[in-house]
Length: 248
Image (cartoon, rainbow, N blue to C red; front, side):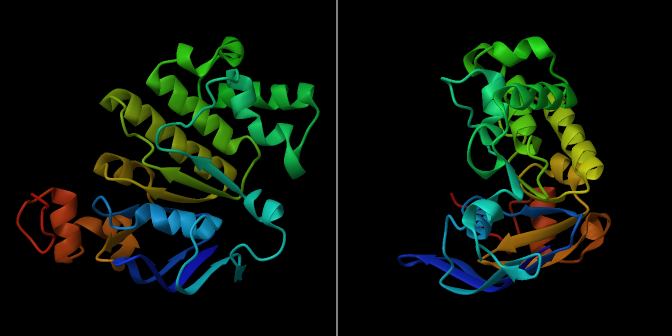
C-alpha cells in the first residue's frame, strides 16, 4: 500500500533520512521504532505531503504520493496525533466529525453527529460525551476521542503518532487493544511510530527499525527478539551499551 524508495530528506545540514527503502503491505500494521530525532515523524509527514523529500520516491497504492487531487488523496487517511490535538473550542462530536462537516467528505450535520456518536461508542465512550468539550475529559478519554476522529471517515490508511504517550499503563493497554481491534475490523493499513515496546508487541504485524536515517531491520514482530541485529537488540532491551550512542 505504501512504498518508500531510497527517500532522502535534510533540514539544512541535518541529514534526517539517508535513503529509506520500506514497503508497508496492504492491510498490515507496520510499526516504526527508533530513538527520538531519527526521522520517524518525517516519514509520515512525507507521505502526506507535509514534508517534501529531497530525492527518492513514495507511492501509495502504486501511484506517486500526492498525485492528482490533494483532497481526494488525503481523504484516504486517518491520523491519531500524539497529543490528541483536539480543538478546544469545539464539542467532542464536532471534533470527531471534523472531516464530515467540511470538504469533499461533507455530510449533513445530523448525519455527521450520528456517525460521531457511533464512533465514540466504538472506542468505549458513551453518547453523553458528545456534547462535552475536550477540557472536560481525562487524557485517556481525549485519546479515545482522537481515535474516534481518526476512523470517522472510514479511511483506508491510518497513521498513529506515539499513541500511548502520556497515558498510564492501564489506559495505554486499553488504547493498544482498541487500535489493534479497529485496524483488523476495518482491514486498514496502519503505520505507527512509537518508543513504547509494549505497544509494538500489542499492535504490530511488522516492525521497522529506523536509525541513522536508514532502515536497519524490518520483519515480522514475531522475529524481533531473535533478529540478531545489534541496533534492534539494543533498542528493544533498552541497553545503554551498543551501536546506538546515548546522548548524554
